[in-house]
Image 1 (tube, rainbow, N blue to C red):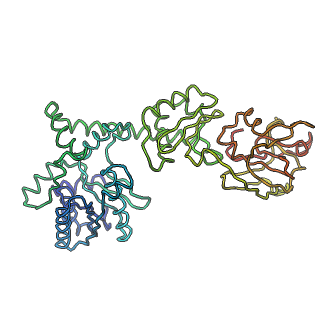
Image 2 (tube, one colour; image 1 turned 30 degrees about the horizontal axis):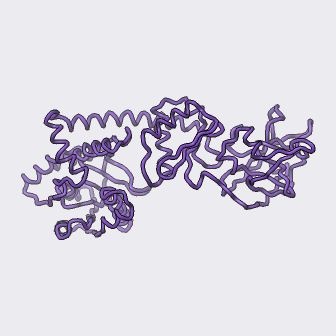
Image 3 (cartoon, rainbow, N blue to C red; image 1 turned 90 degrees about the horizontal axis):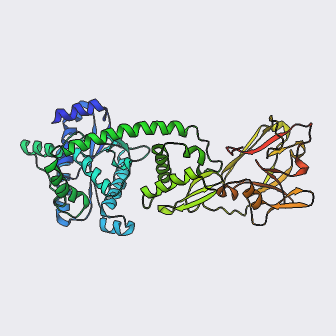
Amino acid sequence: MFEMFLQSTLKDGILKTNQRLLVGVSGGPDSLFLLLCLACYQARFNWTIAVAHLNHGLRGEIADQECAFVEALAQANNIPFFTQKVDLKMLNSNRKKGMEEAGRVARRDFFLEIAKVWHADAVLLGHHADDQVENFFIRLLRGSGPEGLLPMQQISHLSNELKIARPLLQFRHRDIVDFLDREGFVYCQDQTNEEDVFLRSRIRSQILPKLEKSAPKLQNQILNLQKMMQWDQDFLKDELKKRQGDIVADPFGLCSIPCQEIGNWPEALASRWLINQFYAVATQGEPIQYQHVSLILSQLKEQPSYWSMSLPAGITAVISGGRFFILTEEQKTFDSQKNIGFRLPSAERIPFRQEFSDPSFCLTLKPFTGRDYAVGGIIGLSALGKEMFLRTWRAGDTIKITSGHSKKVSDYFQERRVPIPWRCRIPLLLEQEQIVLIPNHYTIQAYQAKSQEQKFEFLIENYPL
């Protein structure tokens, strides 16, 4: 078994020489076997090993005894030992996500803390092939999508700097136990693994044994299915990456995409883009469900002038002005009362570019080389060098259209099908309380270019023309 571990680790390149490896050890057979494997080859690969054990505070004296067992094991092998005791019930009452999720978060935070203190290159965990199958059923029963049914990766990341390695994913639990028993190694047995308190335990003790009576090769079939699903996922991920490379970023840093573009994608790609973007902005809360994704995709094909839908975690999906948005609660509206002093550059400083924040956007000014002088945002020499101030839209704002006639900016934006999330973020430039310029959109008559003079484009970067 040790040789199998070595061959698997070398073949897949999971571990390298001269690494500092923090091993999560519960005292159970799987994590114990992992520690024994590492200790066996420690000198050969010049690994520095430490043991981390989290006491969840759920099983009283038994949990304390397991902690003492792991500590004694580490000391016997001259391995540094780190431990922490948490009150998982209290953590769960604060988060209200279930005991299993509270335990997962507690372990993550614990490993991050110890790895930082000890300067670990990787955290090693004893997940094995049976865990893959159990995870498949857990996520299937909880309504997960295709990505949630994928197998755990041998290498993943706990943070930007710290990776997680799972060297035992090719091993079956029963093979590990048989080896330890045959060789006379002592390990702890967590009784909750045999009880039906958690969904994982019920799957392990009830559901899988019943299914395997009808399909003895069920676990291997699921593992093979997961591999094939991973192949599909890798292809779709690469294809999505290519398409995303052609998407112009939202001019105000929001999560958005033209409806026509994503509406023409295959559902397999469009749905994955939606799910990825949802989790990019929803840092916590309930997951997005199939019914949400399905309804959004149908609306993207219809392309209504306006549509919105509340999603989990306080997220809102919006279609407006031919564009699809995924917005947080804070992003749905923007109301700034700030006035920012701004001077248009002189001709010698053009091309010109300036970034702004709150809201986030970038203004550019460059020579106009087109022929359509009616394009919005075209200014003449008379505007250059002018002192103005910049702010966003406020209720009641108007612009002069022709001599003696004005129009509300809100009506102007609506007529031009400006997406609603952009309307409160587009910068307006004013002189003496009069709006004189709106990049990409409007130039007051006094600053419009004369027929023969040089013309300039005053634009918001990445704003569609």
